[in-house]
Length: 142
Image 1 (cartoon, helix red, strand yellow):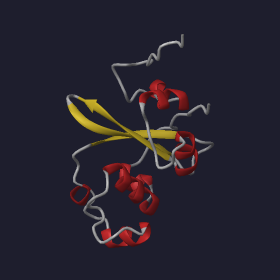
Image 2 (image 1 turned 90 degrees about the vertical axis):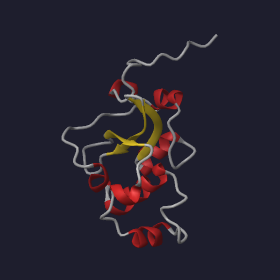
Image 3 (image 1 turned 180 degrees about the vertical axis):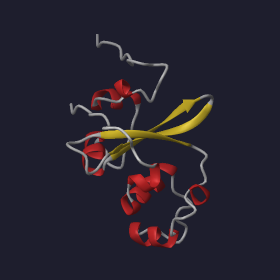
Image 4 (image 1 turned 90 degrees about the horizontal axis):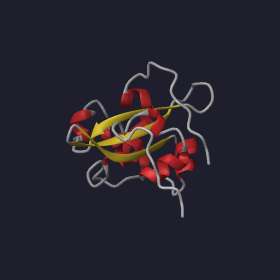
């Protein structure tokens, strides 16, 4: 019988010890732009899952800190009901729409993680999530 999955810090879904290996992330249901979570993180630089914080649905993003030594990551939560056009009112949405090859309704009809991923690809993580003031954390590959 397989060993039951135990989260190191079940009371704190954003704790880095809950996020430091592909197997832990897969067991928690993280997903990304690729079917392989490892590829999503180490090639696309992003993964996400819905969590609850103080009774509110949030999207927990894990993203690669480009320009840092080795593969290091940080995390950020954004309310699941965020209106992207209000949150990122400085974005040139037509430019993003053209960049990702989306139809005329972008960002309408796209999930928040898809929109955030597109914004990061175009503007960079620091412009979307803000500055990361620490060295980040490592994620072990399987």
